[in-house]
Image (cartoon, rainbow over all chains, first blue to last red; front, side):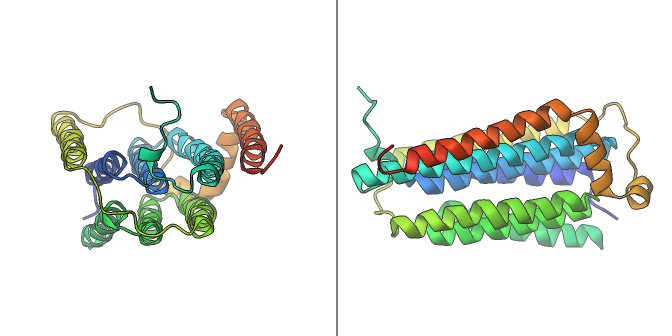
Length: 101
Length: 167
C-alpha cells in the first residue's frame, strides 16, 4: 500500500506549524530565517503531492519558482544580517529596534 | 511496504524539523534543516518527481544552506542567550497548534479533487520528468521564467550593495 495524498498533506501541515512555532518563538534572526525555509519546504511538499495527485505539472513549476524566490531571499536577507551585525554586533531580533517608536 | 517507508522518513523529517526549532546553537539548527531537506527529497522521489528531488538537494541543501552556514560561521554566532520570554513561547506554540488543528480540520472535511491532468507514471517513465518540466517551463511559463531570472539578477546586485562596506 502506498501513501495517499492525505499522508503528504498531513506531514506538510506538521512541518509548516513547526516552522510557525519557530518563527514566533526564536529570537536569533538566522534561526527565524531557517524556520521560514522550513515553512516554504512544507508548502513545496504539498504542492508536489497535489500535483502528483491531480496529474498536472503546474504545481511542480510553482515549486521551481518558490525555490528561485527562496534563493533570492536568502542572498538579500543574509546580506541585511551581515550589515546589521556590522553596526550592532548582534542579530537578535530584540536589538533590531531602529524603526520602532 | 512503501507506507512503512513513508512513516519512517516522515518520522525523521518531523524530528529533524523539531530540532531546527529546538536547538540552541544555530549551526545545529542548520544541520538539522539539511536533514529535513534530504527527507523531503526522498518524498519527491516517492512522488515520481526526480527532477524536483535533484533540485531540492542542489539548491536548498547545496546552495542555500551553505550560504546560511557560511554567514553563521562568518558572524561567529554562539548559542543564543537563554532568555526567551515565556509569553512569546506560549503564544507561538498556541498559534502553531491552532494552525495545525485548522489544517487537520480542513483535511478531514474536504477532499482533494480537481481537474485531472494528463501526467501519469507511465508518461513520466517514458518521456522523462526533466523533459516534461522543461517543456512546460519554456512554453506555458516562459514569462514567469524570465521574470525569475530578473529577480535573481536584482537579488545579486542588492546583496552586493547591502553587504559592501562603503558603496
